[in-house]
Length: 403
Ligand SMILES: O=C(O)[C@@H](O)[C@@H](O)[C@H](O)[C@H](O)CO
Ligand SMILES: [Mg+2]
Picture 1 (cartoon, rainbow, N blue to C red):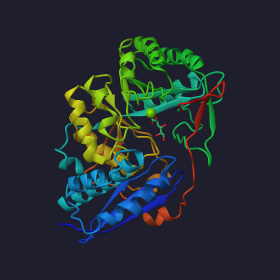
Picture 2: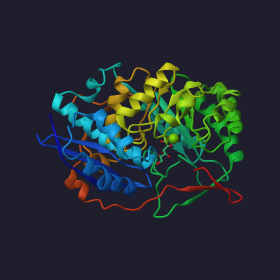
Picture 3: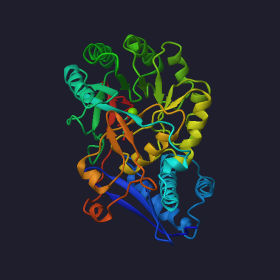
Picture 4: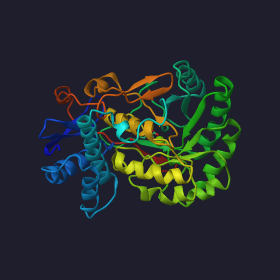
């Protein structure tokens, strides 16, 4: 069995920061894991290098579950985005190693394919409704079966999800947090018109999604859900901050619009009540921030009991290593819903060569042994870490709000 002899953390910034863990075994097999936490990258890099790597040396790389439990219970200080992202990186790397030693793609180790391909959604956005619909028509022409719609709000200089570049979206845009101004009332007036016009332009055979990005109160989310029901949204995402899982009951009482939440969740405990009470329809937790493939399978298994489906986060601040791992998970998990797919830049793809493919709105992880992704460490060296923060949001009166 492959014994771990070394592990190293690689921080690189091909246009944005990524943190990657590489584990090496005595038989020469290596595995990689994504450890990127947008805006707090170095905290995970240190957690891994200073506190986790020393614990891995000498261990049997096949003992994924035991190592997971050792890092989770053995830390004493459980859960949280830094800890669970570090554990996720180790977990991904060990699944990569196991697949390489077995000569099988990871999805085959997870029970094999449950579907022919993984449906993904693209990100149409624009400063105006017209621009957004133009972008959505472009995604439809590219074959996307699902498209997220995010548009600017008249009277607001910026809002979540609207980027200067039509295809690439990177919110961590400054050395110190940029400050955005938010108006719920202005926003609530725009989105229903966006969806009405989008259905007119795109028809009914395409799934349309929207990310509220934690900005509404439950009753406001209920109102927006009701306003959008005639346009059949595939989901409303992060409708309200989810620390109080019970808050989603209030939204449920007012709308049948499907609800998705969880991209900032880092363990099953963040979602337990939401799932068991069927307060949501899709769970967004993903491999890199929710403890890896091992823990995400537990979340999905609980969700399956309550007809909640997966909808893994897949923004550009999750590296191609996470995308590859998520696609292996997506291909196999029985209660798959949809996978977010924000294309990385060519610069990033060059640093992270991968086997996964996109075609006609669907993706596939490929059949390379392991995860089918790597990091070109020579190329990675050329991109120095550059501190970058996610923005903060304030209401028009200056109150600090949810970004
Ligand atoms: O659904 C999404 O993709 C967003 O919520 C993300 O873009 C999110 O804002 C970033 O991942 C934050 O780093
Ligand atoms: Mg989101």
